[in-house]
Length: 284
Image 1 (cartoon, helix red, strand yellow):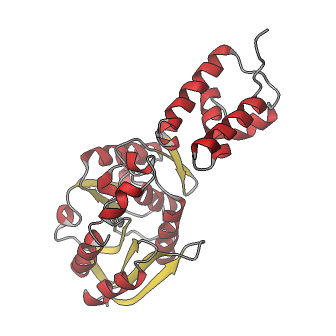
Image 2 (cartoon, one colour):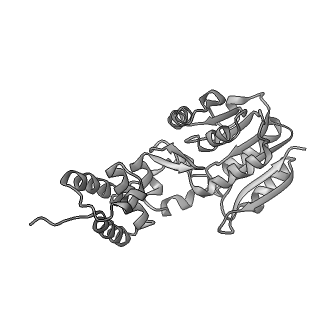
Image 3 (tube, one colour):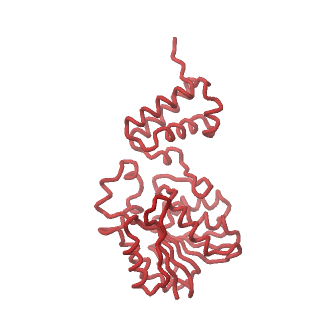
C-alpha cells in the first residue's frame, strides 16, 4: 500500500530535512514552498492539515524542495517577495528585498507629507521595492529610480506596472546620479551595496546567488556610500534629505561622509535588532 502523505506529514518531514541541511527558517521555507506548489496561501495549509497530497502535488513539491536544497533562494523559486505589504516580483536579476529595508521606507515617509509631489530619487533601485512602495504610499508623489543594471530595471518596471504606479515612477539606466544630471530632488534614498568585498565569499550559498553587484561595496563596503554622499548636495533641493541603508557597523563612518559633503543634522537609526541600519542627513 502506498504511503499517505498529508499536508501535516509533508511539512513535518520537510521542515526537519531543511533543518538538517542548515536552511534558514526551515519550517517557514517548507510552508512557503508547499503553498506555492498547491497554489494556496499558508493559512489554507493549516485548514487542510490532514488532506492527503496526490502524486502530481507531491511531484511538484519535491521539485521545489530539490531546488531549495541545491541553494536556490526561496524567493527566487516563488518568484515574489512581500515588501511593505505588497508582492514584488524577484528573480536572479535583482537583490531580494529584506524586511530591514522597510525602515528606509518608513524614514522617507516621515519626511513626505501625504500630498508630497516630490520628486524623490531612488538610487540603486534594483527590484524597485523602495521606489514603488513610496509611490504607492504617497498618491501624488513622482519618483525617479536609477540603476546600472538594465535587467534590474526590467524587474522594477514589471513591479511598477503590477502595483499601479508606473505613471509616477520613472526608471533610468545609468550610474547613480548620471542619468539625472542637472535635476534636483526633495529627497534621495538608496540601498546601495555595502558589504565588504572580502565578506562575499563567506556568505551563504543562497545569498551568493543574488547579483554580486548589488552586494559588493568595495574593500570597506563604503565605495558607493562615499560617492552618493559626495554628490548628494548637487542633486538635493535646499532642506532636502539623503537617506541610506547601511551596514551594521557603518554608522559613524557614514555620518562622517555626510558631514564631509556639507550635509547637516546627520543621524543614524537602528533596526529592531539594535544595529545601525539607516543613515540620514539634509542639505542646509
